[in-house]
Image 1 (spheres, rainbow, N blue to C red):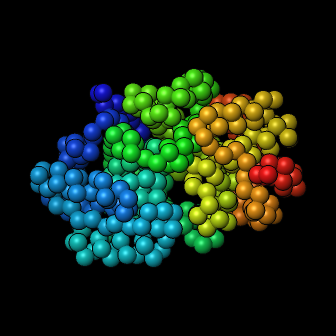
Image 2 (cartoon, rainbow, N blue to C red; image 1 turned 45 degrees about the horizontal axis):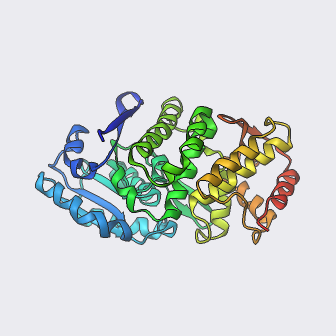
Image 3 (spheres, helix red, strand yellow; image 1 turned 60 degrees about the horizontal axis):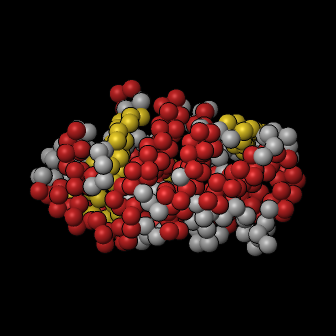
Length: 366
């Protein structure tokens, strides 16, 4: 399978997303094409699970090409997106001798990408970084330059916009993912169709069985189409002043679920899937969405073995309180991304909070 490539258009800071099988072996060449020189040291940030399968081979291909790369290995899981782990990696970067022409390589999923990107954004006021996603979920988080760590009171509240120099997506890494991680990744793939491309949703429904079995050709197409939706929106609104907020469909609910469960009960994709269903139900309830949007949203998510009902052990009032602390809240008022139709979403403000609680109670897991 030949590599596929598309570009995030940001003027002088534009960068390619390269998608293909076996690309981790081509990282040195792709770094050189991105003007990342072997003259300065690199830092690879990865987690324990990914390190076991890919770290040694990546360091070897880099060494053979003349690059010097040290590594910082973190515990797998959302808990690593913390101030304590951030400080530890910064210390390791300083001790490794990284300079202002160095680069951080994020080898892993969304947690690694967010954390490593924030390290790169703040080390010596900002150095280059490269996304090397190894999960399907990271096809979303690796594109667009949102980097962050969590605070005890909310997800991704400490962060920056810092674009990578290149995204190198080796689809071979996806073949070893646990099925729960595959499902989580498809939540974001489906999301891109729901917000901007109904024909993509049709295609995801038609090919669900083969995609779930990780057919290489179809998977690369799904990733490319999802990344293309995000790249187009980021190119228009890099720092989320308007249109980019549409990418947050389901996320205000989902982030609240994650924070209240201390990132241990639901993974990100599962939380977002439930959030997208709740957003569709709210949209229908207030007469914003055309009839059938909720049913179709739920149907396509279930094809990818994702939950669509939220955990009933959480208090709706507590969820609403957590939602108020979300970054998308404006002037103390909730601003939710809601679907008007499949492939068409808008930001809606001043939704009655009692109605939101009512919908959550109706849609709680039995």
